[in-house]
Length: 163
Length: 292
Ligand code: FES
Ligand code: FES
Image 1 (cartoon, chains in turn yellow, purple):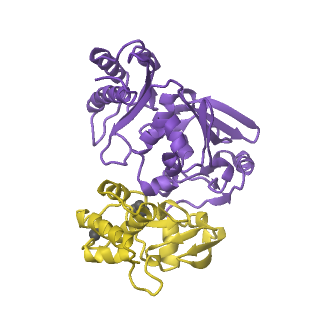
Image 2 (cartoon, rainbow over the protein chains, first blue to last red):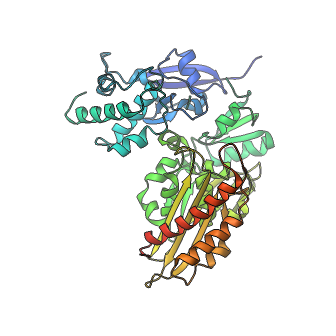
């Protein structure tokens, strides 16, 4: 079947990427299957679990609820884009390791994106604000407490200047 | 790829979106935030041949505070509506309702107009629109018309919008009474889910704490979000004592037509409707500085 293709240009983790995609290709499938950026996970594929969270123009959104063609001309950050430029882990990622904020890791990319969005808007989040920020991300393993601890830890370290 | 194939048009103006709708008729569909549309397209419950994307139309994204109303562009993101302090001081019910809508990620992408046009009878923004009597401005290539919420919501996921029309803006009335208070509450399986039952109320009190203006409604217990203007009128002139609030809330619950499902029976939902209606009237009274 020949389906019409649309040309798109998207800045993904600071790199300009172009492609020809069918309109019905979801953004997460484009990122994972075509760009091979498999850090972003897919769980439910209909907006419930948060595993597919990415930043669109700096704000966390669910990439399973967008078509790739809609991202044309926009800026996307995936979990691969969170590391420092030299490839070392960012404070936020390091805090997740330190605080044991993951077990199987399935929810982790989405949690990191949600946390990143929160910390960019709010440098000193309360417990309640952290819980609200990750409220749309399901984790089947950790019981959430270590994730909340990790985000507190990252906020503290970032406030004292760590990168 | 889970959706059926479709063609895509990124509209750069309201006029070009309306023109595409006119040309394609029923088989075209508008996509705004897509937070409900994309899943139902993935389930193939909806199979448009053309998707008209209005996300890039700047003229559909604004919050304009006027004397008697706040006008909000249909494609304004829910997160922006939630954060706007000028809006929150004039139409406080919106921020209260949005606290129950989805999650950060869905509010960043989801739009005010998208939720209203989707018209889920369990959704929060349609209930707020129904309770406050918001007005929807519908644009087509042959002009514009304005519908009040009560004419706009016609059934579950059904509105009076014609297939050639695009929701352009929503007008939210501003109450001028100095002692105005409002409240929104709901019971859902998980916070952020659609409500099992939701309730919203806005009322105004005079200097003695007597109710001078009242509106309330219930979501999730009928074909559309429900408002109860006749019952709200029974609150006027009273000091909202226990007996009045209880009887009004009970009568509202009796008028609902909830369904049963895996999670709750119709009886339980009707019971919740009465409890939440009373609770929300009381909470609005307290916000208006009355009671106690
Ligand atoms: S995969 Fe997108 S929210 Fe679950
Ligand atoms: S660590 Fe397994 S789902 Fe969160």
